[in-house]
Image (cartoon, rainbow, N blue to C red):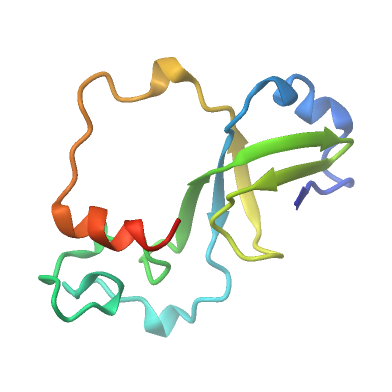
Length: 125
């Protein structure tokens, strides 16, 4: 569940959000020690059989800006509580922004990715 801050927002902030099946969220990897941030090439998900790739070819948390982005399934809106599924963030993670996902904002051309990414992600979901 995502619980919005009642001191900052009223229920009007999420008015109409229930019509979107998959909003996107930007969040802060707040539990990452800044000293552990890495920008050097490394093996994706620590898999030594995968070729090293640079930080911007990773989706991991040890990023220079410590920002994460996830698309989740919105199950229900109850006041400032968003009931969600498939959110790729830990409980209590600070949410920096929520945006509706629009089909028209999806890539207009075929999406491609390296085979190693497909292999790694097939075991995650």
